[in-house]
Length: 499
Image (tube, rainbow, N blue to C red; front, side, top):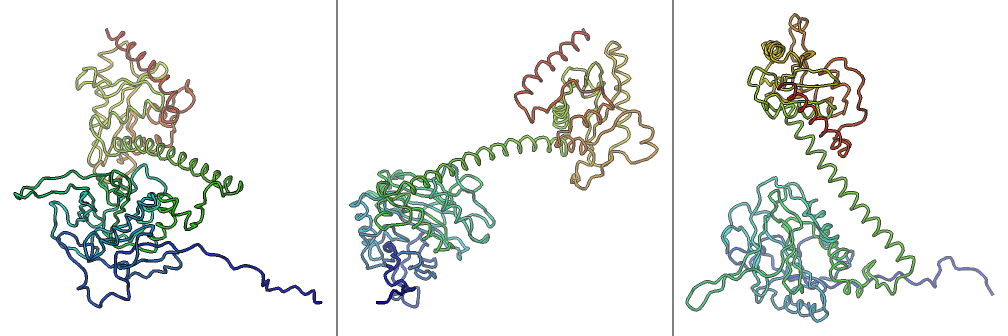
C-alpha cells in the first residue's frame, strides 16, 4: 500500500464565487442593437438617449460579478437598475417590474441615470425653462433639469455625505478635466386640465447633493420619493462605467440594500449572527479608526480654515492695503507682539498727529503708516518728523522717544517682485534719524511669530520683554486675558494725562 501524498491535493474543493447580481440595463442587448442609432427614441428636452449607451462600454461583467438584464429580460428580481426608461415600449414595463420586485422584498430600488450629453455643445430644446436637459421622474413625481456649466468648472464634495455617496463623489471627481458638468435642479410637474389650463404640482421627495459647484448647486445628486422606496442617482455623461458599477456593487447595495447584499454574498455583507468574534472585532476596530480619522480631519480642516482666514486678512492688509485697512493690519501686528497701542486717528487729533501711539514699558513712540503705488516718496519721512515736533509741543508731559515710518511701497506690484528696501538712495538712507520699516518685512516677521524681531524693527533696541510667550494667534485664551486690561490701562492713562 503506497503512502505517497499527492502534492496536487485532489480533495481540495474549488473556490466558490458569489452569485452574480442581476442588474436591469435599460438598453437592448449589444447583440440586438442595429447598426444605426435610428432605434433610439427621442423626446424634446430629453437628450439622454444621445449618449454613448452603457451597452457599448467595454465592461467585464463577470469580473464585476454582475449579470446584466437587458430590455425584454426579467427585471423583477434585479437589485438595481442602470439607465432605465419610463417610456412605454422602451423600458417602462421592465422599470415597473423592477420597482414592484424591490417593493415586494422591502428593499430600496437603486437606480443610476445619466443626464447630459458630453458631445453636444449647442443649445438643446427643453421641456422646462432654464434647463438644457431634462430627466422625468417616474409617476409624474417631478423632473430634474440640468444646465451645462462653463468649461473648467470643478465641483467639490457636498458636506455631510454618508460613506457610499462620498465614495461615488470621489470616483466622479476623477473624471477627465475636460469632462463637462451639469447644474441640477429638482422641478415640479405641470398637469393640464381639460380646459387647457396648467396646474403645477410641487416636486415630491428629497434631493440630496453629492457634488456641488462653486455656487452650491448640485451637479451630482440622489433623488428619493417621500416613501423612500427608490433612490435615483443622477450622474453626468462621460463616466467610467467600470467604476460606477463597481461602486454600485461594493458600496451602494451594501449600504442601501443590505438584505440584497447578504442574499448575493457580497464581501463583508454578512448578518451579525453569522459573523465570528474575530470578524466583529476587526470590523469594530476599522469603524472606530474611520471615526477617529473623520474627527481628526474635521479638526484639521477647521484649524486650516481659521489659520487661513487670519493670514488672509493680514496678507491683504499688509501687502495690498492702504488707508484704514493698512493701519488696522499694522495695529494687529503690534498687538500680537505685546505692544500697547492707541489709534490717534480715532481720537480726533486731526492731520497733525501720526497714526499710532505705541507704549512699551514706560516709553512712547509715534508710528506713521503709509502706502505708495510705486516707490516711496522721501517726503514721507519729513511728514513723520513734523508729527514728532508737533507732538512735543502739544504733549510735553507725554514725551515720545522717537518715530517709525511703516510703508507698503510698490503696492501695485506683486509682492515677490518688489524691492525690499523702502528707500534706496544712499545719501538719504544714511541721513535717516527715524526708523523705516517695509510691510514686506513686517509680514515676514509676523508669519514667523518673531515678536522680539518686530519690537526691534519698530522700536529699536528695547528692554527685555516683561511678557514671555506667544501671541493671541497661538494661545487665544491667553490673549483675551492679556489684551483687555492692557488696552484699557493705556487709553485711561493717556486720556487722564491729556485732560
